[in-house]
Structures are given as C-alpha cells and as structure tokens.
Image (cartoon, rainbow, N blue to C red; front, side, top):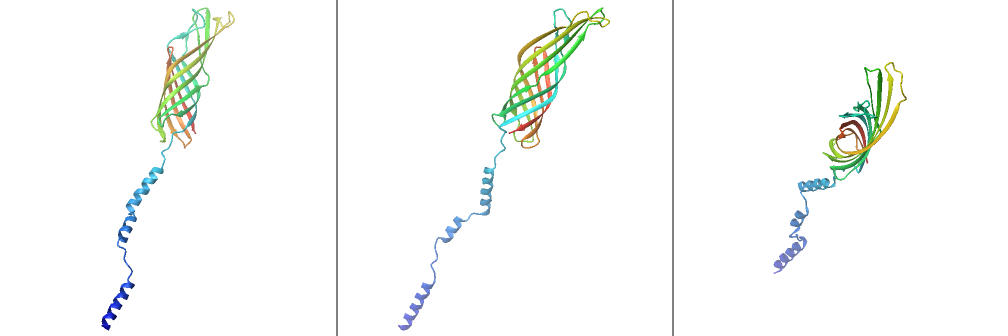
Length: 241
C-alpha cells in the first residue's frame, strides 16, 4: 500500500511539471506567417500603384523663327489698267503661342505672328515711257488650333494641328512713270489697301524634349486664302509649366 502511494505521488508530481501544449498554436502561427513570394507580389503591386504616370503640362509657351512662302495665282495693281505684279515670294516668319492640354492627348492653343512683309517690284520695258510699281504687303495672323498628340510623356512625339486662321493685310503700293532715260515724268503715286479675312489652317509639330520643362519643336503650317497658298516652316522653343 505504501509503495502504491509513493508511485501515485511520483506520477502526480511529473504530470504537474509538464506544461500544457496549446492545440491550435501551430495552426495560428501558420495562418499569421506570409510567404516571401506573396510578400514580394504585394510590395510590387503597392509600388506600381504609387508610381504616377507623367502628366501633360498644364500650360506651355512657344516662340518660333523660320521661313514663310506665299505662292499667289493672281496679280495686283494700285490702279485700273496699270502695271500688275504677282505677290509671290519668301519672308521671315516669327511667332509666339500659348496653349494648354484638355486631355493627355488633346490640346488647344493660340498662336500669333509678328508682322511679315512681302515686297514685289515690276516695271514695263521697251517703250519710251517706263512705269514702275512696288508693292509691300504686310500680313498679321492669329490662329486657334486644336491638336492631337501621339504622346505627352515620350522624349519625341508628333502633334497634328487644325484650326481657324484670322488674317489682316495691308498693301502699300508706289507707282511712278519715267522716261526711258530714267527721268521721272510725274510724282510717285502711293496708295494703301486693307483686308481682313479668315481661313482654315493645318499644321504639324515634332516635339523633341530637352528636359522636363524645355523642348525644341520643328513646326509646319499651311493654309490657302484668296488664291494664295501659304506655308510657314520654323523652329520653335517650348517651355512647359
């Protein structure tokens, strides 16, 4: 009896020294742990969400200098039955503009040119009386463009433009009559004529980014008005804000 009591007492002491093992400890730990693959996938997705796509500039300014060409199909004169000359030729072209993006691919802008003067001269020959005529045509234009951009974030992108052109022209004519020896027979006759017109205009730009805020832009513009086909080819610098 005494031996049985001693054995039972020893078993009770051993059972009391062993700590209880939680039944769900392993399950809880496995559910809380995250595998490295899932962690890396979650991190990558979070970083992709945080990366913002480059936005189109809110406002951009341009200044351009280039060459203009007018090809006229008719002749002008400062008096009826007088000498007529054709107003075709080249002139320097300077312009500036301001625009903004309506969407990342669509923009609207306003462009204005500095006064451009095209001068043409002519004279009769083979007669005792020589008539000379000099016409200086000064043109000012303003245009509203809507543009489609192939990209607003790439280093090089194309822009297709279309809009309405408003034209103001002044023709200053000077005519005089001479003898065939060059002596004037009368005082010079001068006259001025003014006209205001509008026409459709089309163009294309190549935007070459030099940095985040500066770009160099070759430009081309073309329109037809009252029998005259005009083009402007220039190189512009653009500042983006």
